Image 1 (spheres, rainbow, N blue to C red):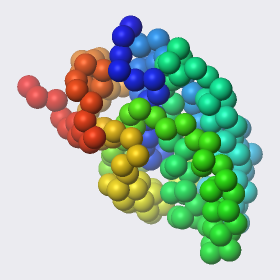
Image 2: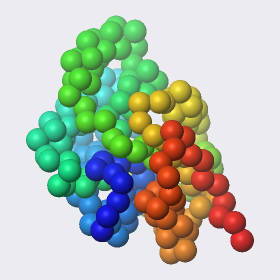
Image 3: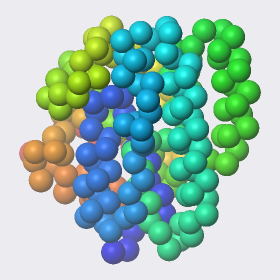
Length: 214
């Protein structure tokens, strides 16, 4: 199916629905799906129990995993392989700024600067913006054992950091979807409307999608 993109990256805070949207769009548009390998990070469950102690190894494990995926993406012919991913490589630093101490962040930045040069730049970034209440509701609904330690305070800090990051983001066209008002999981009309806005409307530097018109 014809479309104007070779690579779309979908982003959002934990519980925003980025993986769900990436999977649905990849299926509907015959795209190659690239998902964040969070379940392979051995430090993640311990991080949610003790952020200060496990933040640095958790961060480096994610960075290494994302770097390996970016290397594979660079070897693809993106003009022949339409890719939809559920993360943006640059977002890795959001978590680093939020969770690492000064010395850890300095070491992290040294490694990050080396790796970020190979990251594939998407043709479009979609940011699923949500409220803390909505994020927490989705996290409880999917009921992952290690996510039960996530607090509303941490989600609020993370949500603010994401909003600030994407407020200033200008490396690719950006579409911001208000995930608190649009239910693409349970309402097929909402999903079809989002799909139309992505693939059938003119590409703009920044687009905001709110509740659907009547």
